[in-house]
Amino acid sequence: MSKPDFAYAIYINASREEVWNGLLEPEFTRQYWFHDNVSDWKQGSRWEHRAPDGEKADIVGEVLESELHERLVLTWARPADEDRPARTSRVTFQLGDVDWPGGPWTSLHLEHTDFGDDHEMRDSVSGGWPMVLSGLKTLLEKGFDHVQPA
Image (cartoon, rainbow, N blue to C red):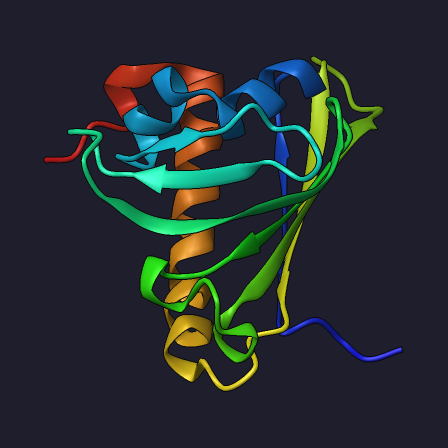
């Protein structure tokens, strides 16, 4: 089995439902990701990572798998590249319960794979995902005031 192009794990002192909503609901994502994630999150549906003004999607894709509060798999591409398989990657979020004092705790494992010839995207997400997921953790554990940009 080959290693994924990018993998990251984080542990968040929140329920799986809270983490799931934090990843997908625009009222949360705009607070730490500074974009809205927009979709009905059903398998086969389109999703968009939109700027706060709602006019421009920076990243688009399709929901490949969606298991409520457990697993989400998406395609990931710039709008100009969404019909180019060699420039469309794949993101998998896997959530699990963690038995640790002071819970609930949730493990969030992310894999971003299948970059094809899009080395720029690979480099971009390698720095971006840790910041995004750290922002999510801070928002869920401490609240909005701790993740606002300076």
